[in-house]
Image (cartoon, rainbow, N blue to C red; front, side):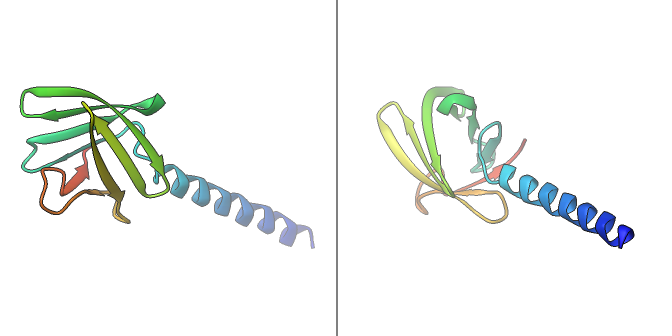
Length: 104
């Protein structure tokens, strides 16, 4: 009985670690995404701040995230992005932010 109890606690700890790791992977905060041949990048900071770069130009932006949906606002323009299951971001299919992959 004692050995079963120990295995139960070990299994519970493993499940908890997995759930926490999965939950942490669903946030863009602290990550940088790039796309379009590395021409475009977005650095998501804490506090809802982000920096979007296109070539040599960088804009101060804000963002909110609700589940897999990210709203990015840069200089009055709003873009809707979706966090994909592989960790990449998808934006409007015809735009510069169509597909961004996480670089760090």
